[in-house]
Image (cartoon, rainbow, N blue to C red):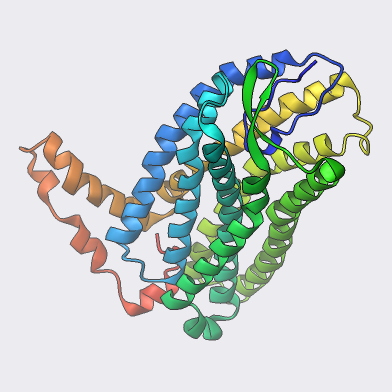
Length: 350
């Protein structure tokens, strides 16, 4: 029987299998559309506020601000494609072959660019704390822009297979947006791309994180500088949260692709893995909403700028006769900014 397609770009390339898995598709059609709708609303609002604050209030004064801006843009790439995947989960692919390729490429580009910019933020913390003298010259806005352009180029290059191999195809009674590899090397392509995803999205970031934060912790234990402790906290939490949300999906994907190696090549195991992919990827998608929440709870300046924005542009219209809302807090926040705090308040630019 023809197996129902997954609702995400990684797993539309479904093979024919001698067992029924309609419950996986039914679960996706009921569970994913409302979840993706919530992620769309909160993720779009949160990341749009991050972009606004970085540009309007922070004015992109540091390399860290540049990387945080690009990380928010990366999350927005994921978020803006969610309405299409939510519709696809509930029904079938009705958006044509070009949109299938474009949105699949955008999905992969968002995935790779997100982790690449988190890696850059980690290296940025490492340079600022461990190699502070060198960082004074290296951590400039210009260098941040150049490295960001380079990283987007690498992310787009890594996402090209998703764009090239995805196409619309009719499977049974439904149209799917599926990956279709050359028939003579289908399994090799599939295994290669999954290994690439795990190496670039999990193994390399983990190695870099362990090295950088081991050196950072050793340096902080020597100097015991409270400002530098705050400088590390936000990026460390962002990195850990990324692994919490994406590691389960990466592991399940690896197990599904190499079922023979894990002795899971039977109908029931395959069905359970497909269901696990749906759940873990939906969990990973929630990550798009999390970074703004982290900034709000950990970044003191972000909270102040957010309060100022709410005060000047929203609350003033909700309560025109409240004198307290007309006080200008932004000047008080900005007055604390000096060239020296720009270098050391690595409360991370937020």
